Length: 219
Image (cartoon, rainbow, N blue to C red):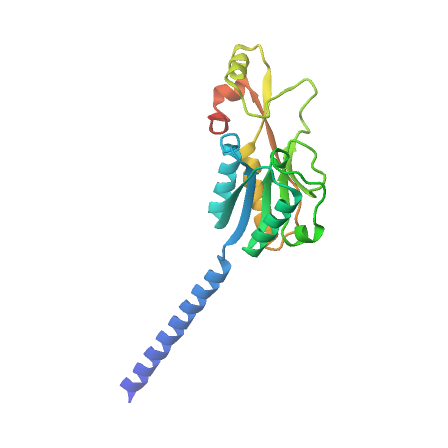
């Protein structure tokens, strides 16, 4: 009798452990459900957007984001709206739009579409038709400071090292890409949607000598 009772207790304990493990696996599966996002950039811009896209990809890997990349060329308003609808149908929760001035002719936005699937726009022009912008914080940049939007050139590095140039402000493109993907991901998880700003980096002789920005200036 004692052996039977002991046997039943062991079986019951095993059932409880198995149920707990299954429940935990189901919960983890729900918790780690992938969020799908979309990046749209001009065709042929892969090299100049490489640092930004590296930040996007690193963020996607960290948060297990499924990232869809599209390339635009001479899109009309109708093509853009169709793309938004298609991406939303495919499950995308947001779009990171890079340099639309190079491929997109648009004069208005669909507020209802953006409420369901927001667009974060990174542009060199004031695209006021997009409510959310990905840009750089230029608070510390002075009127006489040198700014290199495309990254630090070899000539500028030589001038900084020789002392003929005090320094150059360089956008942290990697940070902008990472923060943009992160913001869209957080919005998909329930956070309020907002614009994104990344840092401008002051590259001086001291910073070059110390190798402070080697990883960002190595391209």
